[in-house]
Length: 109
Image (tube, rainbow, N blue to C red; front, side):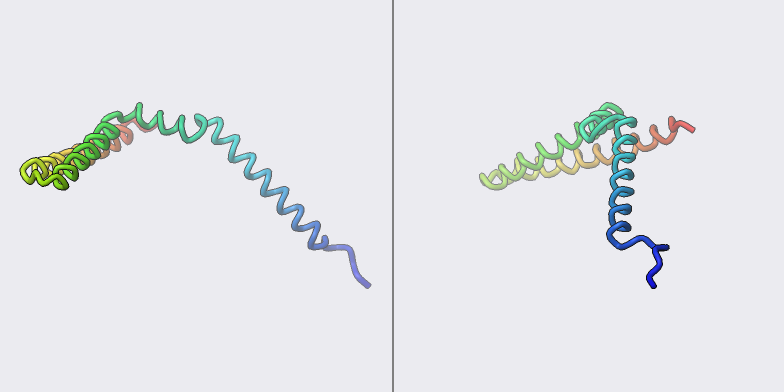
């Protein structure tokens, strides 16, 4: 005789599905309470350390200008822009490190 002590597989999968939905809803609520979606978090990070996006833009501009100069055959300008790219990358890395140091010094306990 079969005993009804254990739920059937259909009941078990339904229960697991409901638990999963509740977990997802809980995570979404936590995200909403911590400042919203990805856009809000990205804007918050940019406000915390605005030098990093500036360095990223400078690196991209120097690289683009350097590649264009290389394509057009202007070797001197191409070399200059590649050196500028290295400088911009160094600036970006330094801004990242400074941002990390500042954030670790002001971390809430």
